[in-house]
Length: 385
Image 1: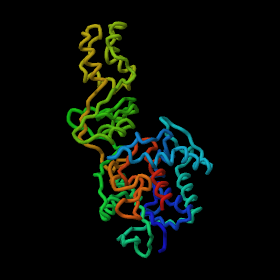
Image 2: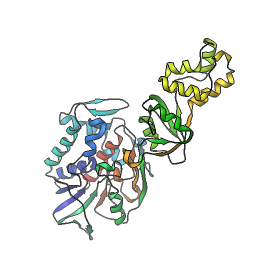
Image 3: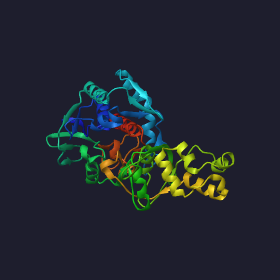
Image 4: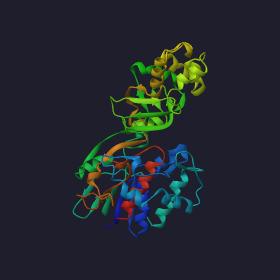
């Protein structure tokens, strides 16, 4: 055979898997459809690459099996990747909420991965359209190349303008593996109906607590010309399903009874004035108008103030959809974890076949978590090849 392993996909997970296997003496070939490797790495974090999150753990991931990611994440931690980054002299900083970024360009991360692959004499080919994958008992063959192991690391269909497709799922099904229905994640939500009014606030942002179901995130929300975005909304979008609501607390730092207290301390003030002190003016005015509380607080019964308080703490939006895979940062769903070993990422029913990274039904929160899954799952497979 030509190689010990052929890795399909030269993204974060594929390159990590390749470098680990190559440095263990395995003969590795990486096939990448794009003209260069690591395209998603290069655009992440505004070009600075949010390469991990120092607090990444199993609770930060969505999966049909929430326990699946535990093994790989425990064996390759954010500190492990940070050690690799520092060994290459790449300067970094922590932004917020444990998010780690390069001080300079994301190119440094791609160059680091390629340098590590070179240490293991990994062969990397770009601009390759993968055709038929042939398989017999012990060999995988793609064109003139063959290997005893094949790794699916081609990601999901998010950001198709970068060449993303559902290839991983088609190939998995070809080998009889089940696929959890993929859907867009970390994606802006669109508004219709009565919520259309809020589109007029396009460009306005505020720190809120957004939640859907049991998932809640305190970060910035951004109004857009199509609906809702910003970190808080992107986070809940991974949990949101069509037909469900999204609730937003516009004043997450306010104590219960704050409006009644304001009435007692300054009866001549208005809801609009109070909201303008806490929120961007255009948002404050819109919320005040929708609440219908225009008179001075001293002229309002406490019961009415409690109702407005409750509404501002759980303002209900009814998204009519999302902006889809075109704007989604990642994909929820993918190759079923029930088909894979959590220790090695190898398919249970197809010896020698592995799946890693975004191709698998493990999806992280916004903020470096998906890269940490790419590194950890890539290491799990690379150390098993």
